[in-house]
Length: 520
View (tube, rainbow, N blue to C red):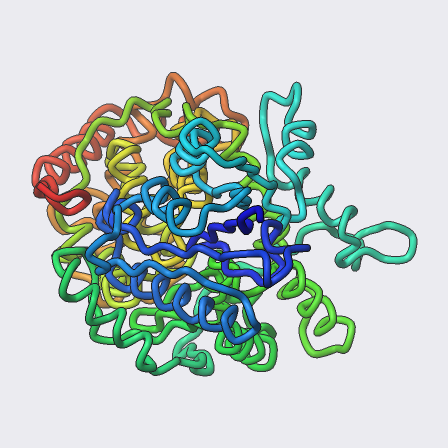
């Protein structure tokens, strides 16, 4: 009698209708789930991130068992654990003698390269199925990108709107007459701005086991485990989504770029971890957002902004990642060579904005997109930090970070390391932007109104230092070239004050110690 079908399910594939499960019969299938050392430690992921993935995996395994599936689950502390996906699949093949290994393609280049070797390593047949949980297939993205010198998300997003029909009227035009309502979604925070508290989930026994495991085995990883509140089951994730649509989506749009010290969530959905694990269907969330607009429960600018983050940015960066790999990992168009400063890990800096964003990152494994782009990323861009060091930091510290979504955002959006294929200009800004969009500056040791000198906001001289050293590349860019006219009007003495202030600050930065990203 032929053996069963072995279906390995990875930690970000926690979806009941996953391609490799769909159509399988429960009496002829063994589901394999694996907690492996290689994945937990190829970078030293935030402790909460590992707890989140392991707990969600264990809960999903129980969900499958309760539904009648046979699940072979290998825990990290299993004494026979081989430590890798390939090693654990090999051991499972010995246990179950399957006629076929059927797996949904991995989301990361590194894992997929190993997966594609399985057919040569194993005696049974191996099939790798397309991950169809995305609106846009990679073949569609590659066709869209063909012959384009610049891959602008806005045009891709319009294609996804047409494909899904989201926020389209009966005549095939965008709802409200515009594709994008970003201009209405840049409101600075008003005094006392606060959002309704999002649902926070107390660890159950399964999650507590994972917390104890990570604290014991991976205690030297970055991040705090004092407060773990992430949803780890489909039911909890749906509860979090319900609360967002009921209480926060109305103000999400106007204040999505706002930053308030100590207000770590504001009106953001906080659903990205659940989406990226596979607990929530992203297209379903978009349809729920559209329904809220159609029923008059949420304004168009908020709903369009939310939908754009999912079928625009999320779909786009996934396609961009595979289209640009593997060379995107090494892209460094601006030749940035500085090491990552130590304060990215410790939070010990007198810059109030950086300190607060790093605190939230350490305590929550989260910071919202403007904190990541215009504070943490902006500083790395201006300071000329090496892209690989920045990429690895983002991959380590955020619970929703997988390379396919992190790498394009950091390399191409934050650092302009791809030379402009993704972004039309570097997202460089002085302290004025942070002052406008946050309340950080009022409590900072540095003065945002001072442009140079020891007490000046470091973003101010760093901005002009960045623009000066990259003039040859950037001056012809129509979106920012006119800035150089301002620089030229300053005169040589004033220019030198900016450059000297920037260089003095850069010289004061302590490079990160070894061991934060990898052991040793």
